[in-house]
Length: 182
Ligand SMILES: CC(C)(COP(=O)(O)OP(=O)(O)OC[C@H]1O[C@@H](n2cnc3c(N)ncnc32)[C@H](O)[C@@H]1OP(=O)(O)O)[C@@H](O)C(=O)NCCC(=O)NCCS
Image (cartoon, rainbow, N blue to C red):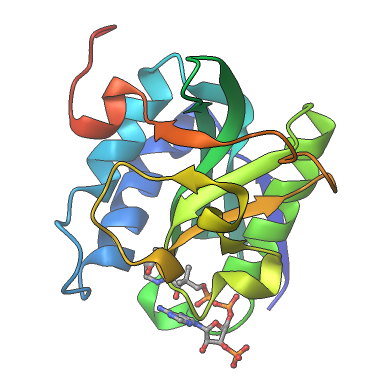
């Protein structure tokens, strides 16, 4: 299966929504609103043009990943900008064939080219370490959720980029269902 990873285009948005919904549909830990999250983030100030990527195979979209801006706010209220990876989706019938890996690796490359040094996410503790993610707590970064430490992850896309970055992750309002810009 020949795979192309490319930037999402405006006419992909509907199919991306369907794909994301399908990817999370079987998951019991999901609230099944990830496709709505993607739509809100696209319209938000956290959106970074060029960091919503699709995987295309045989003329159809089979995967998607979105990286958006996040802040890590320290106790002295200084804030560092990083990226949040959410969500990462592969069509159920095509999982475990390297599509998610290809999307995430390409997203990391493009993020570095766009000037970002680090990415954070809450996700599968068994999946993300292979891409360089480690518990964010090692950097002194906390997430504002009651999630297991092993799932609250951070990766330095540029070595050393999280040196001196610590505090609590501040998600944009769009993450919580608010759309102030809409
Ligand atoms: C998780 C997901 C993005 C991975 O993409 P993928 O294309 O299926 O995975 P890849 O082919 O790149 O990687 C396959 C490896 O990931 C592992 N893997 C796949 N899904 C996993 C999961 N949910 N948890 C842990 N490991 C997983 C496989 O066991 C396999 O491991 P191996 O290489 O050691 O054999 C995809 O399965 C998916 O869309 N799942 C539903 C939505 C989801 O859970 N998104 C991520 C939320 S954090």
